[in-house]
Amino acid sequence: MATSGDCPGSEPQEGEAAVQHCEEAVHPEEFVAIADYSATDETQLSFLRGEKILVLRQTTADWWWGERAGCCGYIPANHLGKHLEDCDPEDTWQDEEYFGSYGTLKLHLEMLTDQPRTTKYHHVILQNRESLRGKVILDVGCGTGIISLFCAHHAQPKAVYAVEASEMAQHTGQLVVQNGFADIITVFQQKVEDVVLPEKVDVLVSEWMGTCLLDEVFVRTKPIRTL
Image 1: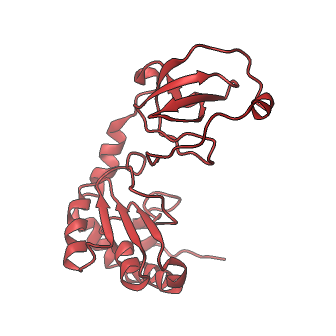
Image 2: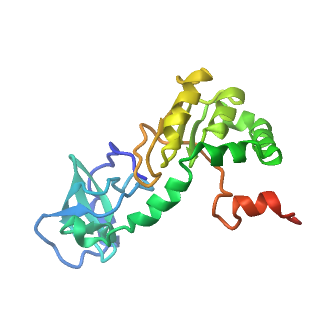
C-alpha cells in the first residue's frame, strides 16, 4: 500500500553516490510501476502500480534513481517494468470466492453473536484506549466495522480507516453513519493492497481469525487449549 505525494530530496552528493557504485551511466528511460511501493526513508520514492517513472540512473542491480511527478528518489528495480504486463497476472477467481463468502449478513451475524470473540475484541480496545487516543488507525478486513466502532467510541482517535473488500462494506458505511461516527470512520470497499489512504497511519488493527491458522467455524465449535 502506497501513499502518493511523498517527495524526497534531491539526488545524493558525489560522496554518497560513490558508496552506491554506479555500474554504468544511462540515458533517462521511462518505466512503469508493476507494483505499489511505500518509501521507508526520505531517500526513496513512493509510487503506485501503473504509474510512469523516469529512471535517471541504474545505480545498482537492486536500486535505481528515478523521478516521478517532479520528485526524485531511489526505487527498487524489481518493482519496475517496460510494460504493466511484465508482472504476473493475479488469480482474481480466488479473491472473488474468498471475499464473496464474506459478503453475506448471515456470516457476520454469526461472528458478532459469538460472545467470547466479540467481548475479547472489546476488552482489547478498552485496555489499549490510551495508546490509541489521537492516533490514525487502519482496520484491515473490517467486516461490519465492529472493531472500528469500538475504537471510535472508546479511544477518541484522530481518524479510523476501515477497509473491507467484500460487499459488506456498503452495510458498514451505513452502520458508521447510524452510530454517529461518520466524522471519524471512513470506509473503503477495496483490497488493502489497492487502497490509497489520505494520510499515513499510526496503528494497524485486524480481526485475523478468518483463515489465518484457525478457521472461525473450528474456533467456535472446538475447544482450544492455550499456553
